[in-house]
Image (cartoon, rainbow, N blue to C red; front, side):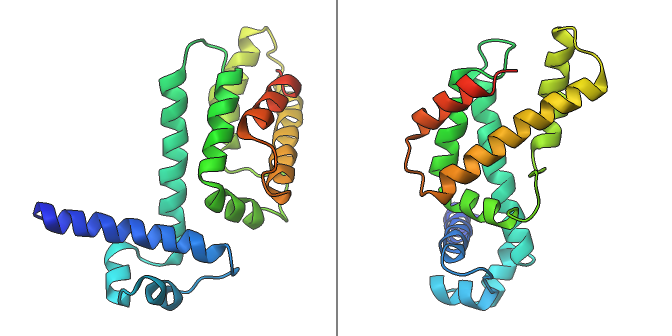
Length: 181
């Protein structure tokens, strides 16, 4: 693929993702036809980029989750993960991608707690940290994790449901002050 074709491909790929996020703000289910009409491409162009709407949604989720993970890795200044800096990175990330996270939180509105991303957090960050603190009982770690998970999830849901009225820095400070492990 030459440079102009690659550039065209990337521009269309981005347009599809952005249009999907915009459309999900106004309707619960987005069809491929609706998406294609919005950005004036044909269905075959859509299928050149994605197998279906689920694949599109998953690609967006993967890209966004990868970005926040990379942001955390770049900021790592200590072995303790739950710093004010990391909560700020997280809340600013949520604010930047508020269209996606609004959809994500609405999708998970009936299932509590939200599990997507939390298993990795528990296995790679919380459990090793608890072990460093001398807490090795798996049930005790699990109960601490549930408290953390519930507090974080409900705080973020409320923040989104109330239109992100508080600044990302304000919410980061609250999470930091309340969710200390």
